[in-house]
Length: 344
Image (cartoon, rainbow, N blue to C red; front, side):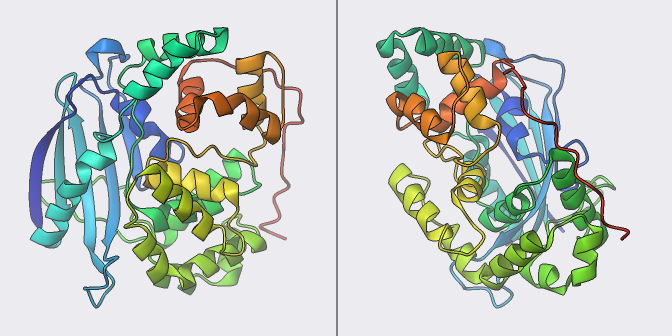
């Protein structure tokens, strides 16, 4: 095993839990868990916070016969308001070094909010002024970009049109039952609960009856298999730069895969590429949150897009601010309580 480490200086205060928390799928996520620490953020950042992650680094250029550079265990520790120590353990020096190379983008060092902050001040309407206040309370919030497009697609597919509990159960048990243990050594011991996200080959090997036990509906498992069958192409697409126009084109390419719609593409790219202007159209709750927070009344997808239009090209930044603001919309819709058919 090879251990590599570096310290990333983000230049300004960094809020690790709120920035990277979007990557964690529930409290029992086997591939990613954030340690929030004791600091609440703000201008002083969140020193003492940290995170465990494990993932595979795929070879989008096709230079490796195996299709991947290697699996990696990553430990992040925030040392000060703006500095994060990154330790990467992999089976080879190439894998560990590749993980370190991706760390700045993962932490959002390239995610610049200054234009958005100027825009909020310039608009001067009540909603924009309120958003500006939220931003001042959370100046360390950034949009992470993992580069792990394939893994993000799989997690989001499992979240399509199901409850939060269903999606978390499916992801957690898929990795626990079928995922490999990540790299571990005396220098960096991976927690016992950690499991790597599945490769395309591993996903294709999961039998149909097992998906049923995992609480994954047939249309979703079929979409997982379609994406697994296109894994090489997805790994190539993952190399797409994080620039806005390139990400928008990438979203259009992803929606050409049957079972991948606007919502799935947006949710995946928000995490893999830090897509700042890609709101998730098709979400049950999001239009209500945006509508109530920005206009005082609920709305639909079309209304949400109208409300977000003045903030282009920062529409997802608006949503992230609403998520961390503490605002809670009224809940008039039915609480979904799906029947459990796994033992039938």
